[in-house]
Length: 326
Image (tube, rainbow, N blue to C red):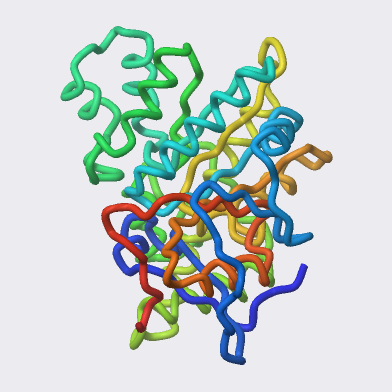
């Protein structure tokens, strides 16, 4: 794996919603990037490894042959939600049952999420209250409701990937060492002590945190970093536990998170592979809202092999998301 020399967050706002790891990230190198002569287009699906474009049939066939699909989005981008719906439909079309995991829901809201999917809770207001939406995510639910509606209509299992926000905040204040003594944390299955740090992950994430939060002390950077570790390890544990379970029939776990959680396969995919301890067929799909005036954004993603596939979609309401510091 060729790692970037430097990486920058595309949006401070995205960083806030992701928590403590950048949601939409792009690699840059020490030398200036030369815009690509290629005219990228919305709907194009690129395989960075070979710098080739897949047809729709090829992409669907690939999706139908793997056990885990990691989708990385830019938060509140409608075209990214639409792309995820296409992925879910493709999995179903291939005769497999998707299990959807979403970063936007947390462990402490799973009971409310289950009640809504089963029809026990019918009003959206009650559902959002029971699923702890405002306490953990807090953004506009309508932006993500199509995914929940799809899961409900098709009878899919939908899991909250995120650790509860109070736990994440506690780690950000006190570090990973505080987890074992946190009464609230003892109700969840959290490894104590945490696995050994991953040098590659630290190299990428720590630098991004410094660039997106300039001027803080190294002590603060370290605790924000540890909160990122906690979230990625926690989300990976949900996927691992689910994949290990004996679900009836062929299933595919579809993980839907901010793109920063799948970059270079480091944050969540690598942790799932470590936790499982056995080979599994998986794929990372990085969603990028294309600004035709900035093809260099796509060049960077391809050059640095940000994911197994880069899917170019329409710009969202936020337009092009600038890197930190621009």
